Amino acid sequence: MILSTELDLTLRPMKYPQFFKLYRDSQKNIWTTDELDFSVDFEHLRDRIPEKEAHMIKRLVAFFATADNLVAHNLVLNFYKHVNSPEYRMFLGKQLYDEMLHVETYLLLVDNYIPDMDERKEAFDAYKTIPSVKKKADFCFKYMDSIDQLDKLDADEKKLQFLKNMICFAACVEGLFFFGSFAYVYFLRNKGLLPGLAAATNWIFRDESMHIEGAMQVISVIRQEYPQFFTEMLEAEVRRMMEEAIEVEMNFCEDALAMGVAGISPVLMRQYLEYCADQRLVQMGFQKRYSSKNPFPFMVLQDVQPLTNFFEKRVTEYQKGLSTKKEAIVFDEAF
Image (cartoon, rainbow, N blue to C red; front, side, top):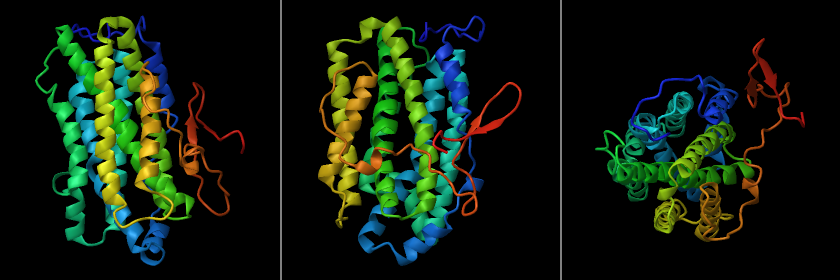
C-alpha cells in the first residue's frame, strides 16, 4: 500500500503505472533558464511601470525569491520519504529538478529586477521580515513542522497527519499561493508588460499544474486504500485549512495592492482564490465550498502555448516529444 512502511523498490510488476505516466509526461516540459530574456522587462520597469504596480511587483518578487525552496524542502523531507511508490519517487525526482529550476529562475528575476544589493537582500529575507510574505511562509512551516518528527508512518494517526501535509502543499501552497501570484503576472501580461516574466511563468505554470496533479493522484490512491481517513471530520478540517490559506493569501493581496492597481482588486482576487479552492476540493473528492466563478478573463487561457513567429523571436514555447526512436518537437495543433 502506498503509505506502507516496508520500502518498495520494485518497478515490475508496476503497482502504480499512473505515476510512471506522469513521470514520462513531465519530461515533455523541459526548459532551461538560458531561454529566458528579461531585457524588455527591464525597459518596462524603467519606463512603463507606475509606482503602484512597481510595489505589487516588488511583493511578487519577494514571495518568489524563496517560495520554491520551501516546496522543495517539504518534497524531500516528507513526500519522498513517506510515499511508498517507486513510480511516484521517479516523478518526485523530476519535480525536484523543476523546483530547483524555478529557484534559479527567480534568482535571475531578482538579479534583473532589483539592481540594488541591499534591496536584493531584503527580497531574500522577505519570508522572515515582510509580514505578508512571512505569513505565507509560517503557514508552510506549520504543516511541515507538524510531521517533522514522523520517522515512520506506522500508525493510522501518523498516516493521517502525513495526508494533511500533502493536502496542504498540493491544494494550498502550490494550488492557491502560487496560483494567486500567477494571476498578478498574467494581469500584467494582459497589459503587454514584462514579457520575460510572463514567458517564465508559462513554463512554471505548466510544471506546477503537473505537480498538483501528481499529488492529487496520490491523495486519490490514499482515498482508495485508506477510506477510513476520509471522514466528515477530515473534510471539515481541509475546508478550514483552505479558508486559512485564502485569508493568508488575501493578507498578501492587500499588501501587494495597497497603493491601488486599476483592473485588479482584493474583491476580485478573493473570488479567484475561492474559484481555485473549489477546483482543489473537487480534485480531492470533496464538495465545492464557494461556487465562485473565475473573475479574470486573462486566466482562462493561462496555459495556452503562445505561437511564435520564427523570424521575430526564438522558438522556446515548446514541449519535447519523447519517442523510443528519436526526439521530436511537438507544437500546439493550432500551429
